[in-house]
Length: 261
Image (tube, rainbow, N blue to C red; front, side, top):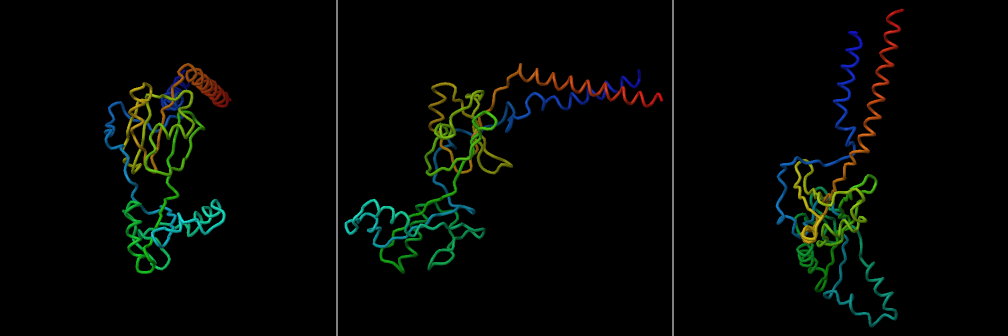
């Protein structure tokens, strides 16, 4: 009897320590009920500041970009546009020392500028070598991660401008998945060790309108909390518990059988 009690005690401990993962094993990014979510004003659109690791596409034209719009000397306008779009379009990595290595200028500190500021600064620097330089910069590798509420549906999406809302981000990912909680949409931003977290309710027209005014930023994580299908989880957990009980009993009988020999 003592051995049976020990076996049952071990079984109960196993069930207790594993139950939280049995019922909701795939739920991520949980927050407590009283979690201090960031205020809505902080989600407004903001110019992206160039940072280490960004990949910039750099284009340089002289005469204030006159060549971009003057297609009169070329026979095929479409061909001209293709040539201009590809002209001088090379990727440059913003390196760990906050600089990029550009032709003629060499290494230029660029971290902390937004795109307009960086273009103006580079136009000034290139004016020593070109007549009225016109510069176009784009960031190639800005992206967001979207979990739409169902396992296997997560997507990493590129973003091309500063004005993509939460609604548009979810639409680009295919919308909220079946089983996703529209009233529990979270946005995680900044350092993942201590992120800002916003929560949006998209289950009503008012909440949807509010979400459509919240703009995402590069490297944001948009997470739709999945629903908990309790009945299905209970049946699944019951099956796992019965398997634990069966295995424990079988182990106990084998140990007891060897002990009595």
